[in-house]
Picture 1 (cartoon, one colour):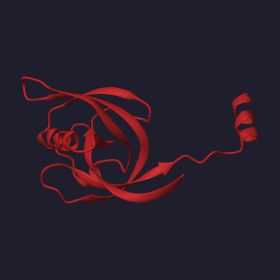
Picture 2 (cartoon, helix red, strand yellow):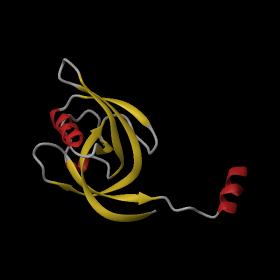
Picture 3 (cartoon, one colour):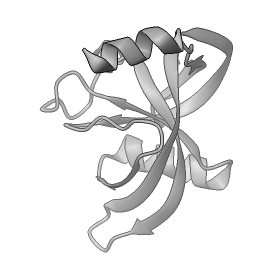
Length: 131
């Protein structure tokens, strides 16, 4: 994998789910920081960085409690529910590596670099598939 330039994105820490590129996933979001991150991206370009928490039982994870590899996703739909939570439909676009977290009291934010897939030797891939 090779990487490109670093850009800052709002981060949505996920519990008990990993989102990959090309996946379309509905998420229910209730934490204040996460709701604020979604509000920010809806006002901007609708791109959010999704990364899983290391411990799903932690309500407010520290920077070191979030995995450093995630996916940049587009918010397709956002619906605010009466109980204050948000249902959001996201589509994973590309894998990213978090290079550092940015200090932001409102929501998680991190600088990340896009990870590009490196194609291998096609004959080796075919041989591995055959076993």
